[in-house]
Image (cartoon, rainbow, N blue to C red):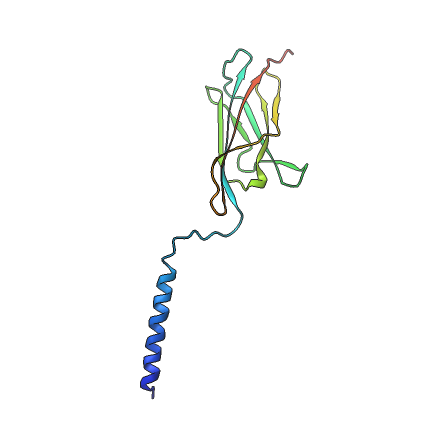
Length: 147
């Protein structure tokens, strides 16, 4: 037989757990697990020596692996092509140790060129494990191939 004190204690503990459980669900703090991330945008334009945009030029993104000299291409999308205005763009949520730091350019009839040691510009501040928004913007002029 369950005593009256036992029944009251069970009811009290059940109510207490319910109150604590529901109050724990009302938090507005962001719970974050994993690796810090950032919004990362790469954009640019490719033109010829007269300033005319080059359609279909390739911009190959490379980023460091965070271990010094080791480099590899961006796995999500490493080769971008320019539109009719010579523009290209790419967006991702990289962790900061995987920034794009080189862009290699090529187009038919033009000499290949590159921009190296790129430093992104931070456009949104960090908030917790979100380290902010960063933009890499580059403009490249390709010279005609004399072959």
